[in-house]
Amino acid sequence: MSDNTKIKLDLAKIKKAVQSGIPLSIMTYTFPHEAEIYVSEVITAFFHEINQENMTEYIIYSMNELITNAKKANTKRIYFKEKNLDINNQDEYELGMKTFKADTMSNIKYYLNKQKTEGYFVKLILQLKNDTVWIEIHNNSRLSFFEYKRIHDKMARAEQYESVDEAFNQIIDDTEGAGLGLIIMILMLKKLGISSDHYQVYSDNKETVSKIIIPLTANNLSSLNELSKEYVDLIDAIPQFPDNIMCIHKLITQPDMKLSEVAAKISSDVALTADLLKIVNSAAFSLATPCRNIHDAVKLVGTRGIKNLLYSIGSMKSLEKFSPEQKNLWFHCSKVAAYAKHIAKVYYPSSKELSEDIYVCALLHDIGRVVFNVAHPQLVEKFKQKCKEHILSMDVFERITAGLNHSEVGAQIAEKWNFPDVIVQTIRYHHDPLSAPEKIRTIVVIVYFANMIANYQDETVEFYQFEPVILKLFNMKKEGQLKAFSDKLAENYSKGLL
Image (tube, rainbow, N blue to C red; front, side, top):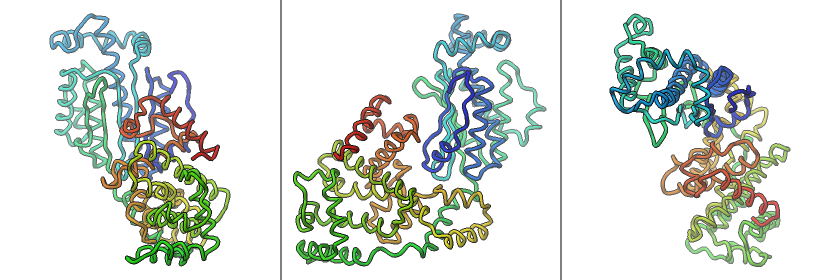
């Protein structure tokens, strides 16, 4: 964000970040008062979205404390450099700290402008990962040994106090604002049931990171999985998987199965034949010549490929509603499937199993959203009653049905329909790929990457919100590389080449 411009709060972006488990980031050089207000607004909206308003006041205080400390650390680098003092030398560090506070506070604008000129920044990262909130404050100046020791001395001292009042009554030195703010922060976190073990400070490469990991309380997202299961159990409006497709599945799994029998069974269903040929002849499968009959399709795609395509066709048939929002959801899913198929082909060209599974896994990744979208009014009323039984407010109900837990709901629907584990787990982990079971992690990573690129094209996520580990995996070191790859995907997709 600009240090001089008031940024309007984007509630849709915050909701998207919560639903998708992607990080929100705010970076500033001088952290003016406008930035402080904006950070408070973002934290308030974020914790409201996850039904944790009781934490807001404490978290805002903690963020302001950590951001102030990060800004102070950057200022110290400017000050020591101008005084020609070595911040890593104990004698020179102690000498500089005798005058640091008085000198910088009397001319603070000068030092803040110098920070901006020399590129010293402070960055807040806020992210929901499963049922924990991760908060990080980054600043690009490494901790000296003496700073590191000082911080941990304050953390140890905080453990001795039972309350903020007790801390205030102690005599604390005043060289760096006494460290009282850090002690108060730790005591505030303790009031939330968050131990000092969940607060970490470390230097990594050229940055210092202060991290708070907040496990959410019982009446929160961790209870949503059980509530999601009840939601799935209530879905009488969604039929079981289509009988004709289940019949073909049974035939395919027979040990003495013949391809000709499978092709004949599919061909006897005109609508299913048309749907299957349409997908097989799409650019995603890159056939040299169009496939004109099911027998050829079965030979070219294989029984595993046919099974996967039947899962996708059956899901769409079961859930189709064709409202404008429904069409947009399926369009997004189709685009992600095409992108994922292409990414698998480019980065994993020799993996036959990956090539067979990736399309259907990507196509069905957002099935949980589709389920929420097709909910009938009777189902909504039943679910409201369940929320009352769990003593959850209508705000929580609205967040759940807006898709907050759509990955888990989608996975449970897939389990209800006896889908293969690879599809179930891809749906469950497509927003958190690094937590996926190792044996299917590559598929989940590709689906995550394809989905994020589609969202990037829609401008609902930004480059910094991509998981850095996954960007590195696909050799996307800079935004320009990602944008070029994204633009090429979009161009080929619009031309029907994917």
